Length: 117
Ligand SMILES: [Zn+2]
Image (cartoon, rainbow, N blue to C red; front, side, top):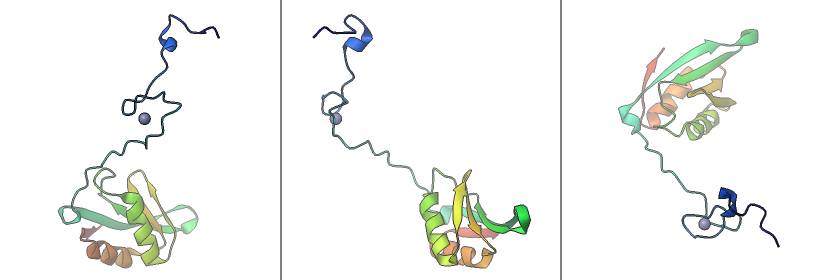
């Protein structure tokens, strides 16, 4: 079979750096980049209530960096505590409804310092 890309960079298919096999044949697990987490007690979460469209309110947790914290996991815990829906958006955890006190308490249990506003 004639090599279609002979003499071009495509002549050499990319190979995996770890197993040396062609990337198409590589079965290595994707590299895990261990994020650098910040200890909860070194952080102060800002908890506040925000109004959204149609008169809805959400409890917003701010001031926790997406790099230093597992925000999706934190959001999952807070949602469970509040029995409410929520999301992570632009580095903020949002829980639907007014759950400021519940969120504050849950954060404290996890070791975070909290501040309203
Ligand atoms: Zn590999």
